[in-house]
Image 1 (cartoon, rainbow, N blue to C red):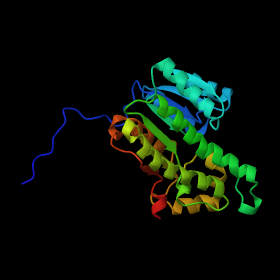
Image 2: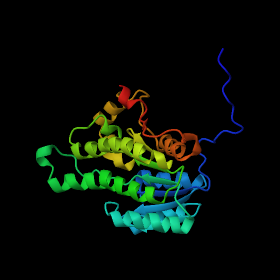
Image 3: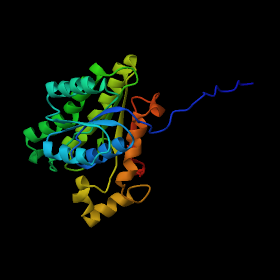
Image 4: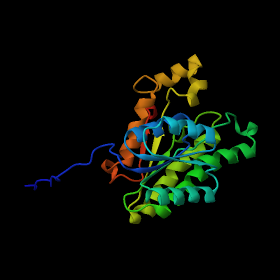
Length: 259
């Protein structure tokens, strides 16, 4: 007869990030702005990182909790290290680093994609994420969380999106490798891969009726995602409830990859 499972005295609260010290890149608009509000409302301190000072200043002015603002380029190693050092110095450490900065400036086939555009997408979306993780790992202690923003396009590429799809597929491989590398330090590493969401980034697809309907029909839940559908995955991965989860890809896609 099997013995009874041990019941702990208390359970972690899913999404409880109150008092957490969070660094969020790509925080000036879109998903980054959404996550800034979600984590701040959940009681976290949020260090906002973006290229444009005006964007993050505008976001910070609307947040209820403590913030730090950093304006710079995530593809520069020294900038990431300066963000990590300044945040750790101000708040005594970093608990969560969300590598959310990303671009997708080109929709073109290989013959029409300039090499410099390819390199820019890979530099921001993949190298920038690595440099952020590298900087964070230097100052994080046991229980640190690294969260990358991926995409379902990393698994199901779109026509004309070779650079973007490659960068997001690369994040998955990097996540699994970093999860192994950083496990001895107690740092977990995971990816959130959004599907198709009704957001400014997807406006070009959503405004095209044929494409919009095709995406809806190829999503198991038969609808586009809404911003509120997305934040829970990040809050979960940042919380103690995800302490035993690492090297994982959380597809928040309404079943898009199933159809």
